[in-house]
Amino acid sequence: MAEEEIRIPFNKHKLDALKVALYEEGIDLDQSLEKYIGKLYADKVPKNERTKIERLIQEDVKAEQEEQDRFVAVRLTDGEETVCFTASVSNSFYGVAGQLKDMLKGAENSTVDSLLEYFIDAHVMDDRLFDIIASAPDNPLLQAVMELNFKDCTMSFKGRGATQFVRYEMEDAEKAYKSAESVPKISGMAREELFMDYLQGREIHAADMVEQPVQHL
Image (cartoon, rainbow, N blue to C red; front, side, top):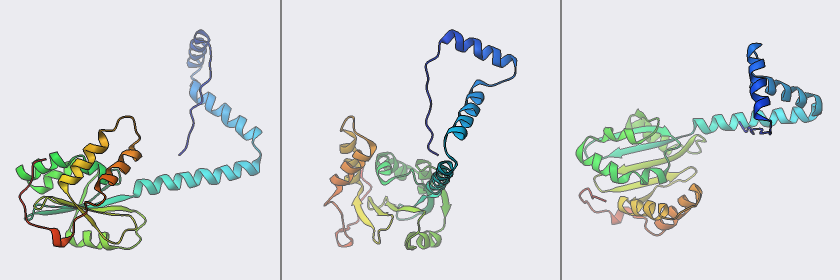
């Protein structure tokens, strides 16, 4: 919910004395100020305007809840073992690309399900359920679907609303991430745009796929 912090100048000695006096009466300063501002709001803002604002607040709450409910679906495989799961929407394509080097080492030295530790709030499911979720049209909560194949060193991505996967070499995704991270003092959104710009034209198709060993980036 959108909230602003109010900052006002007040003499330090006066503030300390006020806190002590209120404490002795069992009163919390922050709560007192919040109640006072709430009363000031109710007294000064017209009722019809407050009604509009309450609707806006409820819309904000709903939007935040929907954001928390959004998720990504991921399938990991090394050609022998496969694990499918849902995870927090914070596991972006860009973020996963940034962990590929460590994940490749993990896939080589351990089982695929050990890679779940790289994903926030992962919940395992079976292949059948993954396929249902991944192919379901217009799921408003599904942010993206990713498939990481550690046998052929590729990663596939399908964003919300897309109908087909786009597949890349893991090596290209790793290089795209490093390229985006090398630019100083830019926003996270700008880095993700640079990341996708680097990958433009580096998509691979089924006809291009050849079996290859796990690479060390």
